[in-house]
Image (tube, rainbow, N blue to C red; front, top):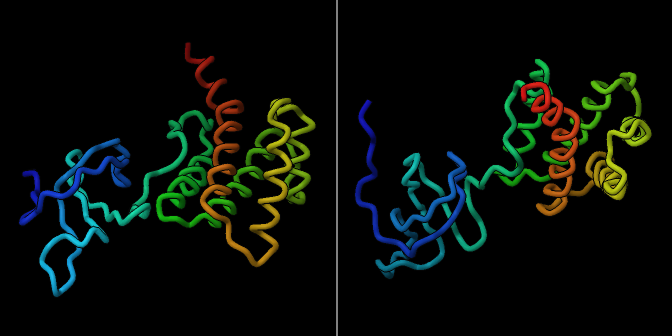
Length: 195
């Protein structure tokens, strides 16, 4: 299959970003710019950069990037011991970061914590707080990460029970905590078995 090319691209101010399509850290100066009807020059209000790795477009205006970069570590599906749901839910949370659906990230993280707790031996159909307490009491949460338990309790409950939206920082915190748990509970044992 022949590689496709974008036509009539312009030289833009060089921009470093992580491509939301291929997750490569790139620097691009090719693409399209937003201009008003009175001026044919670059307005500086928005650019569509073309990734030189995957050849896909990314809109950038100030700190806004669409699609955004996927946040969090990419895990091999095999570490989850055949639990495709857990893998898919984690990927959904990561992809929600990409499209700035931060409250959805929080809800996915809440669901992930419940699912992880059940995989670790907790009973099904418990309250969210009981799943967190199970992981904590059974030492799945490291001693010096206990402060995260309160963050998860608070943010998880706020996102689920109150009329509010999570912001990017809250979503990153929740996803980082999930990443730590996945590393400890699934990834590290998988690596140890395969050494």
